[in-house]
Amino acid sequence: MARPFKNRKITSEPRAYYFKPRAVPLCELEEATLFLDEFQALKHSELDGKAQAAAAAAMKISRQTFGNILASARRKLADAVVNGKALKIEGGPAKLARPACERKNK
Image (cartoon, rainbow, N blue to C red; front, side):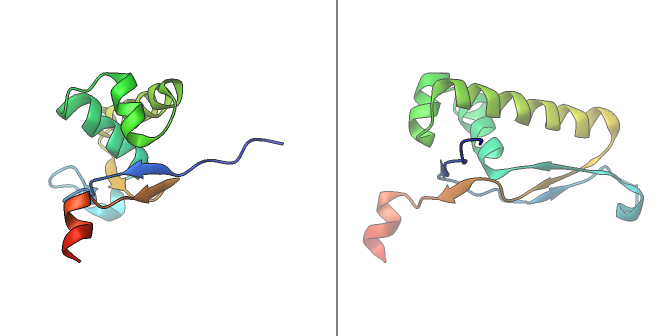
């Protein structure tokens, strides 16, 4: 029996959940789905410039798991760009954790 997925800590949501090539009707496009944990891994690694160990700790997962998630995210992103697919960001084994400053104000 496989080990169940643990929820990954997600601290930011995407500003847009869907991207598609210009001038191609949506009904003609294939989709690639990027999970929220993959989105968060890309953000930590590529935009924030965090090392894998630090990013893994922030997401409360192992460094190896972070590396696997990041590799999957990069593959899906490359597939969407190279093959002209729509990219949808949604779901996956993730739990949104609000930053501490938001919790104090509410």
